[in-house]
Image 1 (spheres, each protein chain N blue to C red):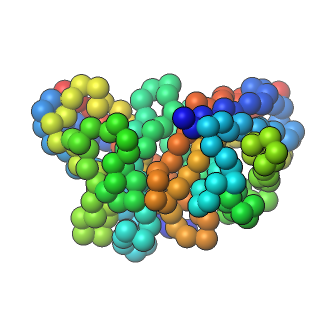
Image 2: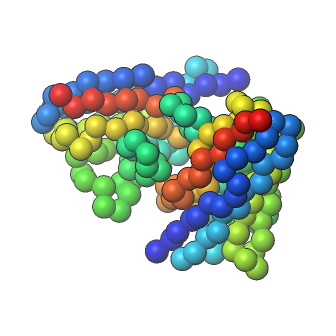
Length: 118
Length: 110
């Protein structure tokens, strides 16, 4: 059974870089045709796609966040990671990692709350 | 910038039917966007109900169905139950690796 688990600091300070990691079990991040992505949800608000990395290693970014975001993957650890720089209070959200697929639907981790505060 | 639109809220009676829609501020939603529908209850991660327009995820009751209606994707809930009270999000694949979510619809069963 596929499982995704987010990890990383739950608290960050303004202007710092936020780093999160998603550990995948029960499936390989090099499996054909899947995108591995990060989505966030500010408290009481909707979902926002941040970035994805395709199984080939190609990366894709939300244009509104592209200048501050980097996604990467470590196939040896079956993990993928997110870095979000210059964070502000507006980046406070639950951050989800997910396997995204056009033809198989998405599969989500449980999410991790990240609060940006001084 | 294209925005994905959803009704903010809907109310349905137990046993009733409701259809949620997912549109674009510019253009029409077609199967080429591989529309999917997610259900989220408070404090939980979203789970996929429908993917690729009308394919039901494993374990999803058949009272949920997906379709294209006119220029929008649609999620129909037939025979609503109390535990269907949730937020529902549509997701579209815009191509070139880009995914976009709608703002979500809050469904109340009463």
